[in-house]
Amino acid sequence: MKNFNDHIGLYTDHYEFTMAQGYYLDGRAETKACFDYFFRKNPFNSGYVIFAGLQDFLEMLNNFKFNDESISHLRRVGFNNDFLKHLKEFKFKGTIFAPNEGEVIFSNEPVRVEGNIIETQLIESMLLNVINFQSLIATKAARIRYSAEDRLVMDFGLRRAQGLAAIHASRAAIIGGLDSTSNVYSAYRYDLISSGTLAHSWIQSYGNELTAFRKYATSFPKNCVLLVDTYNTLKSGLPNAIKVAKEMEQKGEKLKAIRLDSGDLAYLSKEARKILNKANLRYVRIVASNQLNEHLIKSLIDQGAPIDAYGVGTSLITGHGDAALDGVYKLSVIDDNPTLKVSENMEKITLPGSKKIYRYFNGDGKFYADGIVLEAEKNIDTICHPIDIHKCAVVTGLGKEELVHKVVENGETIFKNKSVYDISQYAKQRLELLPEEHKRFENPHIYKVGISKKLLKLKDTLINGFEK
Image (cartoon, rainbow, N blue to C red; front, side, top):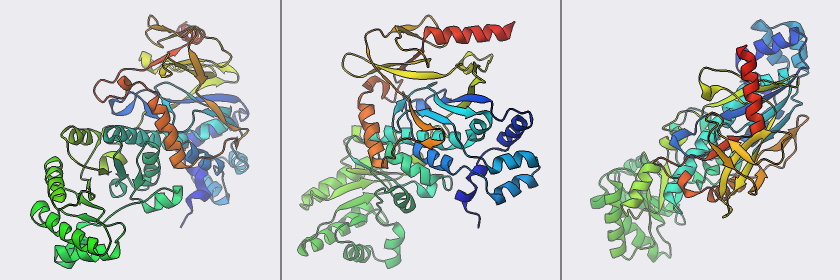
């Protein structure tokens, strides 16, 4: 069995090695480079993205090395011996600038990776894999949390995830605002709260629903949640749950909740609430699951469904609606010279040079606009749309902060890791500063992200140079 952590250096695309070998054989191993990671479009027709995955990526980056077995594998697939000797001593020694994990970010805003051309090239695929996926799931979770308001929401997605992606997805789900996960390994790995009840198979195994409920209540008297839809929710499951709840009361215990996992959740939850209340079981909560997403949860709440907690699986864990965040990794500086990728599609022309991001605030302290500027710039009066240059926003006199910070210097991580729940709390605080019109599901208002006039001029100069 090959240990993944022993071979993280191989966790990249083949063409990263072909380019790295080419650079090495051409004598360019120490050529300085700067790459930008960014995405072009918000997923789910959303107005924002939650930046996630940074700590996992940096942990993997610290282990991005090549042992003898990894080198032997690369030799077998045809790579040059001198290049492989170089890789044997490889360790990322560059510098990375990134937002805080949990930050609210928008399209075209760059994470900056600086170093030599080989090290910055080799880590591309891993960065894209980790940051793209966790940011996608964290954003989906934030939308679900927005719908559910202050109700409990649990990640039930393990069994529907794309293999081991479930591990990172559960972490990202908590960052986005969910309360717990069914994934016990992720809970162990990231110190999360794990939760769960029982399946229909428990009830079926006893052949009698009431007996199954009693046995479960005996095993879990302090945390008893009964699944009531195995046979018939209102005629069988709920009456039997009420019998067990009354028996528990006689022992000084309380049934915590019932769970609905099929049928018309709005209707069934309303009927169940009436029946529970009539039985003086107002304290028994109602949990709902079954193919839920942010839109269905919002619909249930709009219908007045008295549901106290939700379990969300497939839609969350797969990022349903957008299977991937379209994050890319593009060269912006080579050997101290700014560069860009030109395309016939104006939206795909990249921004050159070493850059930073200012976030500007309106008079209420809410996010107003973000400005992407050249690293040396300080006082910006106007930011312009990167494509439609006639659209500009005046930012003179507005409060501002730098959005991107140095997180790796000379290959060493320079910040203290935070717990996933601390990152989640940060994401919540930042989302509270995003005006409501950017959070709505239908036609969210487009957040202003502009570039400085100096960056615009540099971009145009480089494009004109290519056209000659």
